[in-house]
Length: 550
Image 1: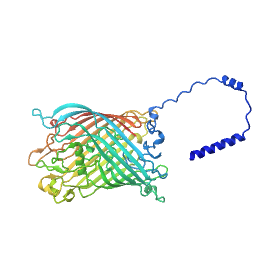
Image 2: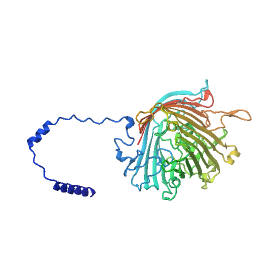
Image 3: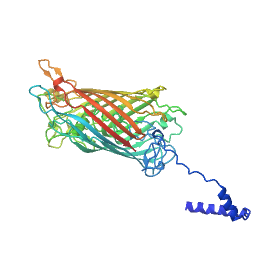
Image 4: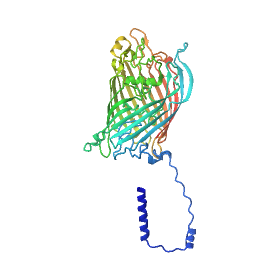
């Protein structure tokens, strides 16, 4: 109807203009032809040159035109949103940040995601037994394979203006799953689906117009399923924003911090805004409660990487003494662990940014976990929440410094990041007195540096990036050690006591942002194990990844 009205109005204006104009004088047809013949032929116009790679817009593509994208690059299914990404606090590829303040936009459903494809060449070791002559492990055939890729789909929509936001994200992983006792360190890859996010985000003080921006724009309440806010690496583990192809040992399979910790709960984020023309946000604070605990989540992550026969689960959270072995049944659905402890874990994280290029912070999460033995299960209906409980907690500190953003230099400067985590999974008093279990203490961390080798001329964005990461993960600080009465507790990958060996890794890599949303990565990993030359594994690797996000 609007188009018809506009067309009718334009037609009436054209008729009135022609009626008011004087009639044109008649012209001679031969004169017209003569004038056309005297016009010099114009050369054909050339097509505009293609822009250089640095000039390509991050929001334009062949499948989705610029009109169907927001400034964040997210595809909008219900309309165009002009909302910048991650502008209101938080980290992570799928953190929607603060919503726009220009009125309701409930129809703008966002679709984001990424796809990573990996190729790896990995050494392999037979850890089922030792060589009787040399005492070391047998080296197996090196395996080249495609696998370990990941994909993620994110759906998000503002419910009402700047007040409520809903988001759902699924992560599709291909991870190695080895049968219990298997010797292969690079087994077949199996698909796993995790629910990474299913949460409502509420800005409760949006309508407080008479209050300062520190209150009106500084708070965000999140409730539902989300990545637990701890440090920086775990929330930024998505392939498009992660520096390396692999994750640090302490934050993944090193059993220090349960990486990709997804849980149910509620958090409140406070990141106040000070200033008018140049908003300053030097403080970010997260407080929350979640169902699970670090101990249970660690065991759930173990189940993702190993098949466990029924009744044979020997990786307890606490430190299992060598004279006994008990089992415990835990599981997860889409990566979410059950609330089997009858308690809630309290989390807190503070991040301080004196300048935008520097992030200093600390994290802490404390809860209780049920005893890791089946003797607490009562046939009359009592289960783990009714049994004995013991504390479990993790404390961490992180540093992120981008010198290239801090210092105006002609040559590109490095980006530094480091994180340290210490944790305790305590045993119950009954388990300690019986001599079955004792407290497990762990320590791990990483330090990494990324140095751009040059800047691109047009945009000054980094070109090829050379990077290095040092990993350390010790899931049991009591091993190895000498016993007071003689003898020693040693690290041995061939025994039945898993996750008591410390590991270190040196990872050297290259990262090339080919296009604004397409990156190539390559790296070499050199892993070293505690326990001397006879305890070394053949597990070095080379991996290549191509990742694109939309």
